[in-house]
Image 1: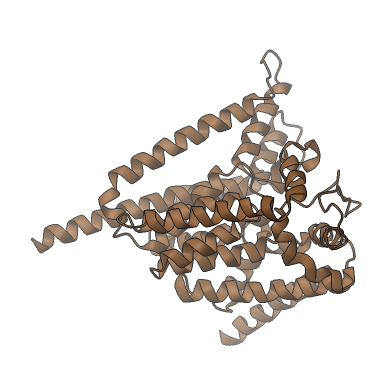
Image 2 (image 1 turned 60 degrees about the vertical axis):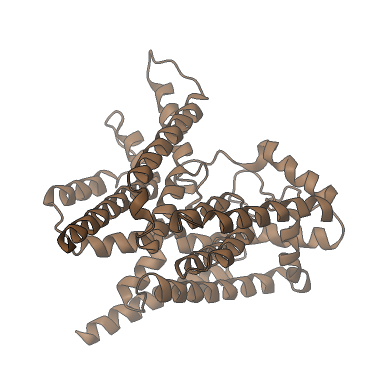
Length: 405
């Protein structure tokens, strides 16, 4: 048995090493890094880093640096190396970030080791979100390391440090600032104080952009109205709920007799957000007395799943956020009975999702919606499961209290 495990581990590690080697020698890989590299050189030369770049011949359209001006200082090191050398440094730093992320996960959240199933899950889970980040060269792995470090500080009852870390990490993509709300959720009595401190740091750093680089801040703010940002990515590239509603509405344009409105997808997404907000408010209100006693790790997992399901833009590599919550759910399911009906349904969906084209009317569109948005469906399932776990934990607390009396 031990030899078999060593064989599997060796096979998995060899395959992953081959993937990393192909990325290192491929001049067209890490196209997002090409954007960072170009922006850093333009900034160092006193130019405008917010200009369109076409970093990959296989991409439709151009890319552009999308982070606030202050973040450019963190990319200045690239100006001292060639593009090829900088890519190798970036790739090596990401490997270190993955190791650090696994250490944080293991120390504060879930048991992470070098067994081949765990290694394979982290590399290929959620449509290979981690490897996708390595391929495109985004900052997602570093961002996840910062977020989970902040979550770990919150779990260890260091709310002010957690708030400061989360506020700084959110300077890049802005949306992760909503994770500051986890602090008052974990600490219902006094969590609002570090929450306000975190909000102050986040807004203060954004304002500092205008003070430090007023001209560049104007270019940065102009990005939000720039039609060239490719903000309407759909499907596997951006399996978000907003993209899902837009794709779903777009399918009706092929149905004769049905009215079509391009804005309907965005409106449906807005209604979905309102409904989701009301559901979460009701769930939190009904359990407000027990939230303070809940395992803070469960609240972190719940926050990650809720963010994933609600975010208007959730790139494929951003699903690294869901690796650990999904691992928790899989392990928790292992301790519970799973109905055969659901397993058969899962196998059936896998079979249906194999062909890309079909002569059966509607099946091709169904396959597209199933394949492209599987990570989103999984995140929704994890969210529902975690709500059930918190409900069961609250019931256990009530039963234990009754037994004590």
